[in-house]
Image (cartoon, rainbow, N blue to C red):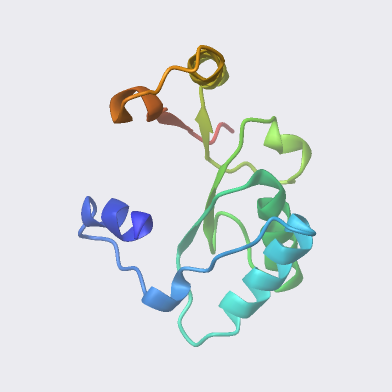
Length: 139
């Protein structure tokens, strides 16, 4: 549902319903990413780009892409979520979406303070939107 909402902001993008693949991070996120990529690429129609929500899952996706002979980013653009220096995982540079860790920590501390004070938060107190930022590929 969230992916479809996000897609609505980019009507020029074509997103096939069967391209959306839920990947579990348990018990082995890297292997799960590898297997999901093999499954995705076994279909007739292939996407031009992927958005992967976890850096370790992305490692498996990239390994599967190389196994299949897919060149990144020439054949497939991979954008991933990561707050780590993901270049240590991959021999290619990929754009990533990261979150401000100071903002996450501040939100977590705020939630902890609410819980400790036994304060019943309102919906606006309990929900905190942390805005990600896109980190572009650098050569």
